[in-house]
Image (cartoon, rainbow, N blue to C red):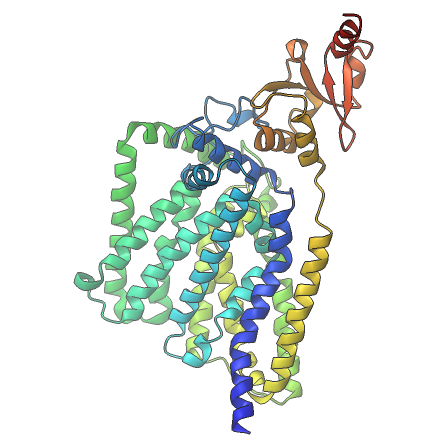
Length: 500
């Protein structure tokens, strides 16, 4: 009997992790093997590839000779700080110009994110080992968020920035959990935390500053008596950030880039002169609406757990440690989201740095009841995780056998047969602001675009502008999704070649 219980305990220890990993792979694996990626991720991969090839540099990143947004057309790409481009360019130097590079980079980001979520969870529950062992739960809650499983395979800057923010918060948490509060011995933690904030800001800008609030939030939630130590930690984190960032600014190319970025991206966004999530007051609350949309499954799960617990007459109250974890993570998530509401330039993936803490918040709400249910229904828990794992792999195999086809990627590959790499081709005016055309053609064949089609040999067109060409002289190559590649005067050249 004891042997049977011991076996089930081992299964309950490892099966949830197997299920969690299998759940992650349902979306991550197929998205890593198809040719579909959001335009931002394609642009960032193109910049990193160019940097690896010596086209542009770390402080003068280069996308192409053309760009779909009017305010980012310049001699170099200053839309975002360059750290992720530099990191990813290292992989390009090692592996060459392969689509596998950004997918491997995304895998690295995924693994590090999972590792840090687990470390933070275990650190938060280090006094309660029976809760700490549920480290798979916040990972599952994290990847069950729509924005997370959509964004991680898409090479977003926010995913990389989130790693540095998590590291900063982890270092600060490690200082407080050490309980020595001796800065002469543990000063390295706040120093590292400050450096990580610099790295976060060099990845995505000022939105990476929110870990500066972590120590103060920790004091408010956990222990007012250590306020003095908390203020010192915050001062060291802030001082380290200021010193390191100041050193970066002393380098002239860095200063020029960051000044251009700040004026062209941050200031313009605050002045509502860039992309907009909406108009008026509601435009400022787009991220709040997106956050609520993302956590519907978690709220449903919470309600379901209460009903299941009630059916088994399980009455568990949230412990003091768990309640504090909920308060801490909710406030940290809020510190990441609230500053972004100042601007109406908001997108769902802007939530990424806050979502690990949202996930830990919900996992903390779940853990008491899941622990109680597992103890009284261990065999049922083992069977449930085993069945769920099989279901995950079934879905993954189905998705792998039906990989999503991307028309624009196919078009870029077809154009390779006609146009030399790194050329500039024409494009019809009505198509110029289509970001997918710019990013796929640049990523797959290093092509730039121009609306000055009169001197262009090749023109990317659709049915709306096809009538502007002389089809008796120009050759038209059909592409997917009602697009065409027009090769000007090719028919005349072919006709001439026949008679000579």
